[in-house]
Image 1 (tube, rainbow, N blue to C red):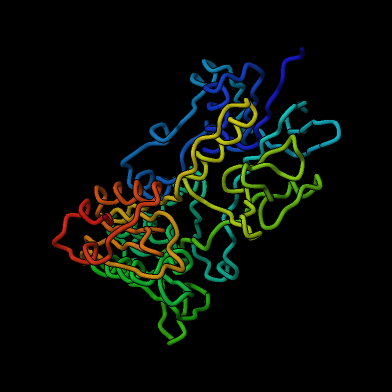
Image 2 (image 1 turned 135 degrees about the horizontal axis):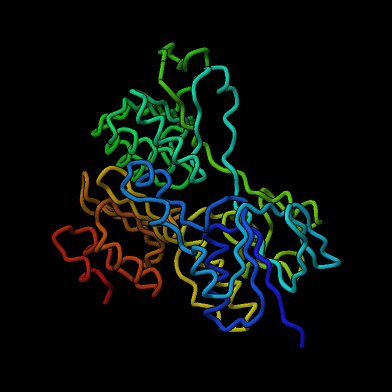
Length: 398
């Protein structure tokens, strides 16, 4: 029997996790992991935080360096662009060579969404998507006194916090009426607004603005003249390779619940994958957890090993000295119970007495318990949960 080959297009976190999991699950064939960036695979969450502040180095967040790849028998190709896909022949073309595959895993990630009109300002502009972006941001912070961050989602708030902690004057511009409005409930947005305001960041939410030479003009005619701009308005999935090969795409590569594309020999994982939900809707997740879960799930399918038990969606963000965490679903709850206040608070979203979602600000220990309850479908006693004097572990229903 000929030796099987798995080719993984994209050497970010999801691709690296898949490659390592294949070996861990006993795959004996060839594994080729190819990525455009010149670096070995690394985790991205620290790009807007400790890689900018100097608290960590790229080596600290690298998850599969050349030595480890060699020890696992993984052929790691950095600085390698995958340029073509022939599904009939089961071959991929790169700028270095062409490769045959038995299974293809698309882990092509995404690119920072462009900020229209920003060039008019004449100011330096940086997005935070790659290691080089973090280095550019670090250099700009060192030579600047002020910055305007366009986008008040998670990335924008993290980058804003890093800049403020470095001593810069910071303005954050968000078209929505509150920060992180797309994914965070109003109470969490309010807590985030208070956190940033307390640390001296000026938030401009729900207000229009325009780019002008030398800066930004707000709808109320306020002029901002920052030294540089940060674009944090989301990412676009790199689905061009898949689309050109005739795979189904929809602002990402369409997959089923097990990350299989419309071609049975091709999977898609990580930021580029758009998963079809049980109700027919589609969801693309950009998270550390999804990169790990999707990479592991595909490795299990290729090796014929049991899939891990599903776990509730989970996300975290570090801003200033605060840890923000979310898990499960924060939409459509019948009841929301808030415990704590100020810089330490937590919310529980209940339906039918069961916890369906939770968020926490600086309540890491209690959040561990909430995640366990989510996974177990635990019923909670709302009256005890609402009583902040009751220990959290005493709030389960009889």
